[in-house]
Length: 142
Length: 142
Image (cartoon, rainbow over all chains, first blue to last red; front, side, top):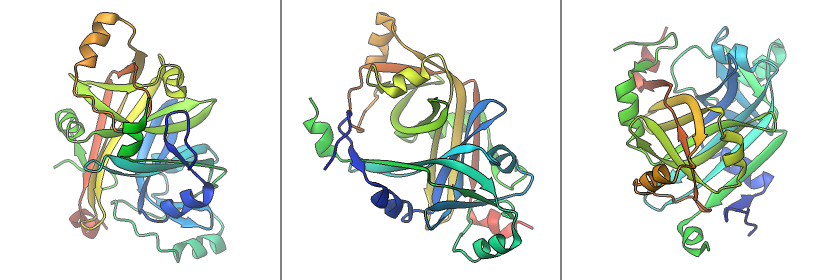
């Protein structure tokens, strides 16, 4: 097991992508009027790309078009004091090609957050990083 | 109940702060070498300020010092397809004053994420926004 300077387990790219596939909600991090912004969204992995559907004309659609964004997923257990998090950093692009849109619309992208979902955003997983921790790590720290 | 353009319930500042007080982990959003970055952290509310403890000299400590950051907490139930999220945007500052550090060290800031926690970051809740949704909202959408 590889640990980082804080004593968290460093997860490899394959494991990060597998963990991402185990959850349905992530958080997209972008810039809104020069301020940091974050919004929870349903997503699905398509190959190694993160696919999100939002409303065309939305703040999220406008702010992420062509931008470098971060996308984070995590799971924590307050009882066990354990958890993991995975972050993707990459370029987001709006999907306008009708063939590509048609393909993405067949993905199991199940939106349980309200709102229109007629605008696809595709985030390339340029950099994928992940960490995992559990109580033994905290007890073992110097 | 006030709804936003996407049909999500808009939460008031007081309710947002109450929900923040119900969880122990949030996500701080900042800029790292000109790229968007996000990191899960344990936190506690002190008045209306978000208090985080991290390692002095860490990337997080350096990148947030004096910066405008976002801080997000949320809870989702995949079974019920319901959830809420709250985001604070405000200036983060490092706490160096020994009296203030002493006061903050007595807060119930319980760190279950590994690493040193000798450096306090205080985020002013300048802008607080929150949303909540449940399945009825999705079914009712046009």
